[in-house]
Amino acid sequence: MTPLVRINWIARGGLAFMFAYHGLVPKLLWLSQGERVMIEAHGIEQVQLFATLAGIGEIVLALWIVLSPRSVWPVAVAAAALSGLLVDVAIVSPAMLREAFNPVSLNVAGVALCAVAWSASPRIVQRDSGSPDR
Image 1 (cartoon, rainbow, N blue to C red):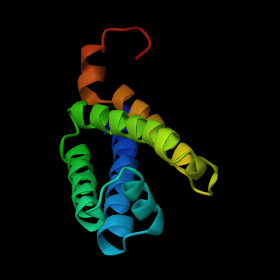
Image 2: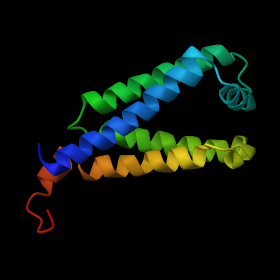
Image 3: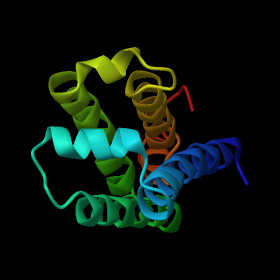
Image 4: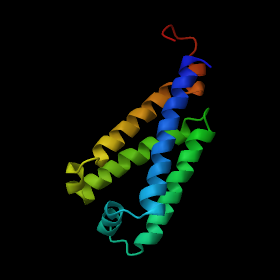
């Protein structure tokens, strides 16, 4: 296994863990108060249903990230989701940005993992293999 392939797997593993954990624990197993507040702030009345669907979506994204190691699409979707959700929190519930373990630290770190996975993607590396810096 080449160093770039290893880096790609580490970054994708970190992203997959992040999405799987946040889909499973605070949404599916135990609906957290923070999730409830965010969902209600959007005027959504079916909080449990929305949280369940969001949790399943996050787990599906985690699986896609891990099961498609040669595709940059799941990484791009993850980066877009993390960026969009951070903007959403900043608009809908800006007070959450001051809390411990807030969306700023989590989402920015997640986007950084996306950048690492994208940069080390076998498909991208293979296309750029003729460049002198690789």
